[in-house]
Image (cartoon, rainbow, N blue to C red; front, side, top):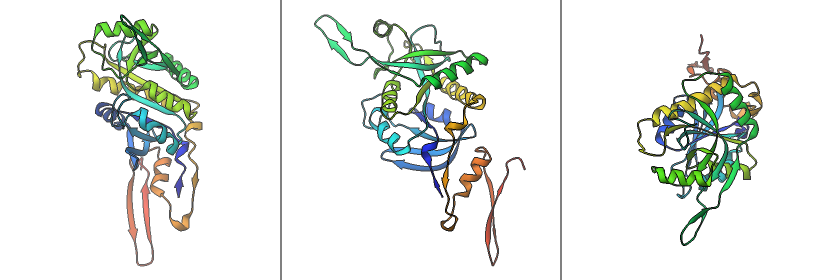
Length: 287
């Protein structure tokens, strides 16, 4: 049996903390390595997903989203891409722990350096309007222990820990509410391949007095919110239509089929062998 992997979405994360948060909700299936990227095919929220963790933050290294995303998209052809993880707040609209749903990402790295000034030359990319609208509508109907807001992301390779630099970012991108290091590169790669994308990150700091104490809870909030959204989403099935080419003579991936039937729940199997035949029993998780 050949799984048509292009008919399921892709989850992207970068840091150890982000990856650990996603894995709390992700049931493993098949794992493979494409180029230098490890791809995990499994289930998130009971639905088939591929999980991809990039090895480097930002856009400068050889194993960043900027350098590896395009070829990964060509290989997988996902139905949509969502990046989960942490960001930092630029305004009081996004307090520590709040989840920011990306509407636009604006890159502030391109600039003209004058003798006495620096002029930012902002480039923007827009997240998928349908995904954005669905997520914001869902957030308005639910109550969480954190706030969920739509946001313009300011994106660059700087680890921001400066009040002065925050002001410079806001002068360049007045509408920005939060910042990160990957959303623009991810958006451009997806736009070029005509693949819908969205970024959901929670604030772990406010860009000053930066520390690690809120990273774990922030990453957990972004993942928890996306998992809750999937459970409520009425238009979900179009993104999870996974067809198969089945050839029973050459064998089938029956464990994968059972995982789909059981909504990604952990699978308990038993092998039965006799002198004439052999079989595998896949137990329903509720039995």
